Image 1 (cartoon, rainbow, N blue to C red):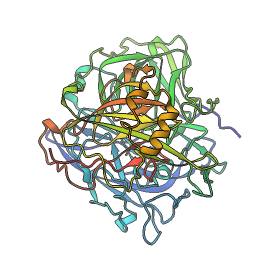
Image 2: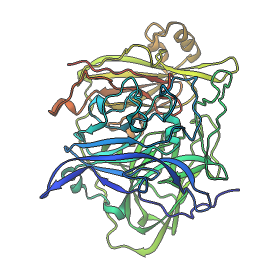
Image 3: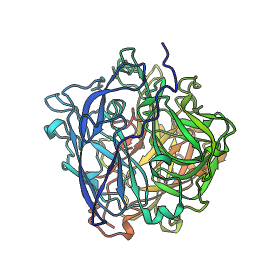
Image 4: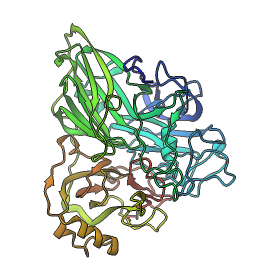
Length: 546
Ligand code: C2O
């Protein structure tokens, strides 16, 4: 039986201030946020769903969790507390490397603040996991209270579970939430639509449910003789926005700001409005764009964030459906159907408004990429290995597993060029912790099979003559993705050139930062069924002092 669309109102998640003020002077704040086992109503007609949710208390815990409102330059300390039960609601696959408590009791979790530029001890390394009451701890565990300096440009971050091999099930169970770094001095003059009425965060993901309300995950692996439960990707039929399936929202005839986070495990969204309304992009991932960019559709991979303004005064109709037409897996998978091709509905009031709101064309200027400061050029290759039956058994970056010694050791403040070669069939959203990067063009590989065969033997892009293969058509980066990002979609069969600035912000700021501290940072593909297991993730980045 199908669920009726647009019956639940869009929910705004509870907000928590990440700072205190004393006589109007802001100062740092310490929060306690728990992970609770509870039930959640995803839809009017669906029985309550057992979930894991972040919140300041079990009653307050929500899917997604509360939105943390931090202030630029003011520390937010968070003690993330695990109150989860001994056994998970979703199956684990122990044939992949997962966080596993010694007594096999308890659910390992660790929180990563995605997009944060901060100390490694608070970065949520996959092996820094812990179970309820900090009873059992992973080999890279650091401390109970994480500390976020918020000393980076204003923008949109999100927090999510990051435990080794369990990220996929912990996210599916509900462990996601938004985090904004606000900088009133820089942002207020922009005059973008603001306040609770006109500025909304939309966390979007896909889920399937059983008729009893529980989350459905196909738990038979693609290649069950090797991995009984592991599937490299998860796709759900229902599209959930802020914890409700296909919600509706009534809006006035004016501009609204939406900070859209794709928190799906594997689904890409190509968003568009069925009535032709456009989007004015003001930010991408955690940073503002230099200038506003107008589009009629845009592609958002898992973990990417688009910060857009929508002007409903331009609508000729009294409603607009936000829709999606990205095939899954992207780009060569199945076409969407009505269910997973529909996101939410806006009901537009007919009454014209006096103040429609505004979006300046110039936003916030950051120093641009500087090629003359590049100290290293690296080749990062994405490989997919298959069984005899053609099912993926594992995916690696540069042919080496997460467990191997670190190979990328940029210096603090260094600028590097990475050429990311995607030899798989799928588009992979590559996420680099701590480093912001700018993507340049994407160039198609010619004679890809020859190159691939050579790489499978030699695993050396230079020896396999990458320069003779990276000569195909070149595709420009979409205008709305030309700024500093922390995720970029690596097109299959292409080489993507990115310029990464490691600890971009740190170079001009002075606050305690120990670049050599353990456990270091990771980079990985953000298709959540791959990372945090030996597949497609490299524990790569360990910083060396400059
Ligand atoms: Cu959003 Cu390492 O992750």
